[in-house]
Length: 154
Image (cartoon, helix red, strand yellow):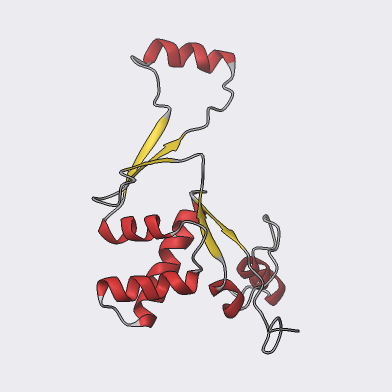
């Protein structure tokens, strides 16, 4: 089955159901600063051991008949948080994503800490940041990228 070009392009660009995000080039994306969600609690914060993130769960309104049935079937209250435990590499990235470092700096930190080449560190880091961002655990702040000769004593 062939898909018309306008349909396939709509699927790939996310233009059907979600809002289209403006295109961002690689240089600008590496200049973004990942920032942890302040609503999320995490431990240990002292710099040692793996990180465990406590994600608050939102309660959605439930129709009254379902609420009655759930109260009859449930034996205990549903949890208010979900726990996500990170491995040592994820813990390293989580601690480093403090809103002060750029994605580019995180790539170099990760490569130096785990003896990776820059490309491998970049691929792994960008995928991990994408996953955290899709779960609303990270956001990105933008600092403008200076053009050559701009902002130097002018």
